Length: 299
Length: 326
Image (cartoon, rainbow over all chains, first blue to last red; front, side, top):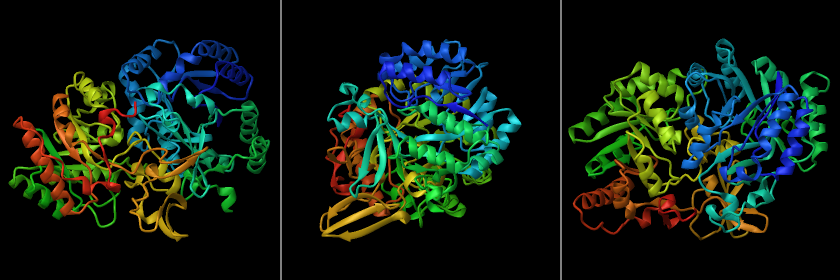
């Protein structure tokens, strides 16, 4: 099993993006998917960073792919998707409509925002050229294992969501703009004020969700720290770490140490808790009764 | 005349809808293969065969929704649903999953395929992909598009479109939302339920009624005030200094007044949400909409909507169609 770094879900300043990918080039990650997955309006602010980041990552020996948007609606977003196909890099589709723009003979990766729930869906995508699929985070371990068996037979690498706030929903509406009483078209890019998303609590002060522009994420950071053995047994080929603010490369090395057996799951959990004491953890989608559940707490 | 596509959670509701003027009725089997997998709802195989016969005698069509995402290792259940829908004489199946569409196109090519809203095909590329790849003939559009966007989509596709005009309103891209399973373990995609009643607990606390879903407080209302069902995305939450309906108000969709614009935008069929509703509700809504589409076809002014009382939380919205949130 190795490490994939997913596209940054949040809206960071160009300098932050630059420093982030420079550090990633030196990290233990095997591959990096980058690009804008949440909102096309953010792209002009940081797209100039992408070629440099790609170059540095490739020079460091990483596999690199570019992501499509997670929700493609506007004409310019469809054009943007078509343009992605000419960048000379593998594409990770996170909205199925990107397939309509993808040349028939082109290999591609499938991201966690595409619904791959069963054998037939995986077989269809493999036939179309998919070589790597990150499964939707909602899937339980039994389904992951079943899909790994099919992936193995088809030569498709199967990934699971390994670390990060869970992408639970995406919408045509922007909740960040709504919170600021602005229309989506006049959002003034307020999602940039919350580089790990804006927290949403219940009326009883339970930490619950975070809003990230048009996306809604879990408040908890999902982690497979306690599930590595189970994932290895299931045949998972990579775990995906989702960028967050802070010394992310230290998190990457924590997961790398766990994969190589240098540290235990509990050691990794301690490392995560030290990274940010306010971070609440979950792994309920894989093995629990519901997504927000955390196995280490239950035991 | 625009086609009126109406919900039926039970055979009785189906008969009521047909008698009230539904051109088409949609329903599902009583299992996790459809996105309204609620206790006490839906059709057995025999129910469906009888319902199809009844509908056809009365000149109406029956669509079968098989619109959840089949569970890995258990796809036979979904395959059987497609086969049995065809055997019962259904006029089409409504599908969302790539794998199931592929299966149905290959094994049941003569059975007409509609794309469920759960596939959230929100642009012409997505729709053309499903049409060209799986022979989909009609697409149910997501509830996030404006009338102008619907018109633009229709100008770039060759298949029919169907849009929701009444009932519950999803604000997230449908079929791509796991909020419910994050809180309860049960999701629309995998289990055919959202914010399931089995995980709802009400508690009287200090003169208020708290409604919790999977332990998370979704809203609190004064004890005597009407309390909407605690659907997760319509809950009342706090973010920073703000408290309110962060995602969506507890309103439901009523796009009656937009019917002429939807017709002009090239929409083939109007869909009413609510397979979980009573047959009395269904009959009342269908009658009102039949009147509206007849008036529209005759070029007459639309009758004033008499449906306000039926909408969730007593408030209705035209949703995204009128573009108030852009």
